[in-house]
Amino acid sequence: MRAHDMLRRAWQAGARSLGVFVRDVGQGMLEVSHNALALVGLVAATTLVFGLGRADVRHQAETVALEWLQQRQEQRAVADGNLLPAVAEPEAVTRATATDPRSLPRDQAAVANWIARRYKVAPEPIGALVQEAWAIGQRAGLDPTLILAIMAVESSFNPFAQSSVGAQGLMQVMTRVHDDKYRSFGGTHAAFDPIANLRVGVQVLKECIARAGGVREGLRFYVGAALLETDGGYVGRVLGEQSLLRRVADGSKVAPNTRHVPSPAPTQQADSSAPAPAPEPAAAPAAEVPPGDQFALLR
Image 1: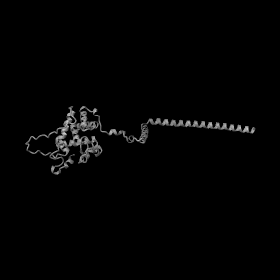
Image 2 (image 1 turned 90 degrees about the vertical axis):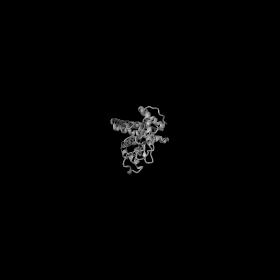
Image 3 (image 1 turned 90 degrees about the horizontal axis):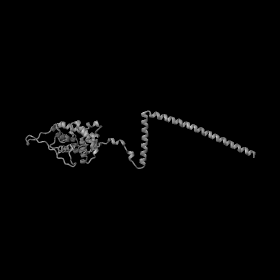
Image 4 (image 1 turned 180 degrees about the vertical axis):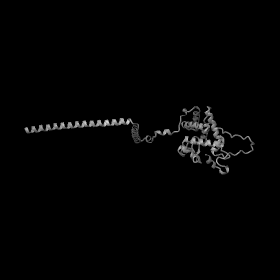
């Protein structure tokens, strides 16, 4: 019995010693861990303070965090069957050609809203075109309603229009002929950018009017009919549309479906039996320009 009691007491003493050892080791490890975490926290706080003090580091951290969050959002959206977040481009709105007509002066707003109703197009992109027509018309010394009338007759305000001979965009400029004019806009694909096409078209129109000596003959040059017997009614349609636009800009009430009356050609004061003088050729004498080729030369 005595030996048994001694063995039991020895076992209990060993267990108590082991328990003390385990507790001491645990407390030591806990203190070491606390100190290590405190050290890590101190390093992180120092790094954060240093980083926030530098704009480049802060911007890089924000960019990385934003990209990570956006990727996570896109992954969740695709998993849910919604593809729009994955293909979204928030900066796309900056490429839109649009201006609220309500922000324009009275005459421009009236013209923009009238064109939108007449040609069944959105008023916001038309507002941007009207605003640009007024601005560039002033610089070029051209009536903005003439510029808008050409767009109406040429393309019905379709920026992607293309004719059978290759005239493109709002003002139906011959892109392959006037490719040099598109260099300032990054290349010939800018023909389908509404503002770029408008600006190039105005430059071509200004050159045609200067070459012909007047608006009516300049329009014949613009459409490529300077060396033809007839322009097919083009000049009359453009000037008739311009007349309606002027009335709208002046505050007159004009129904959007009003049919314009083509502006007649000026009458000759000389003997009516005498033939009218031929217009000046655009780039070469008539004998050197086969019929039809002047369209490419002038547009």
